[in-house]
Amino acid sequence: MAPEGTTVHASAVLAGARAVLIRGPAGAGKSGLALALIRAGQAGPLGFARLVGDDRITLEAVHRRLLARPAPALAGLIEVRGLGIRKVDHESVAVVGLVVDLAAPSANRLPETEAQETIILGIILPLLSVPPGCDPMPAVLAHLLTTGAEV
Image (tube, rainbow, N blue to C red; front, side, top):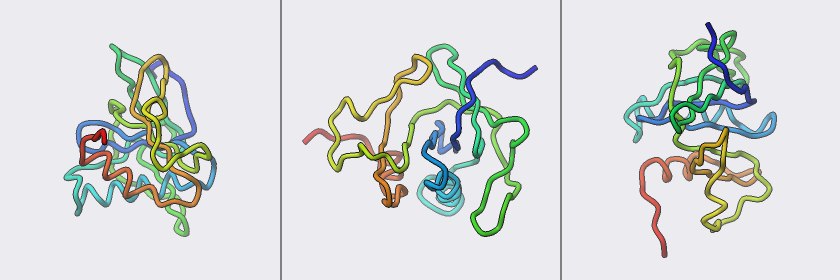
């Protein structure tokens, strides 16, 4: 039986203990960021990263946590630009710990505290907004590998 939830146009990668939910318009680089995170888990600074899902993610609020699952028809599949659809290892469910909005026109270089959160299905989550044309990987890695600092 499939879980009840909301399906969104997004990708998700389990990076360590929590998933990164990657949102953005078509062509913004969701799959590319997912692949970069997976690579960082294989031979880079993350230690562990595995695809949850690409293109469509089912979200469900359970016990004040946001769970992400791949759309059943797309489980284990990811789009690789220039190569097409590829099969990779994946997780069937993960708790979301960060939301990344790609090509976000409202992204600021030094965002206000309230701009660094979003609410999905009643769950408050950290938000990283990446401006159009900007490589998201350095900021995502910095968020995952450091703690926030007030100046």
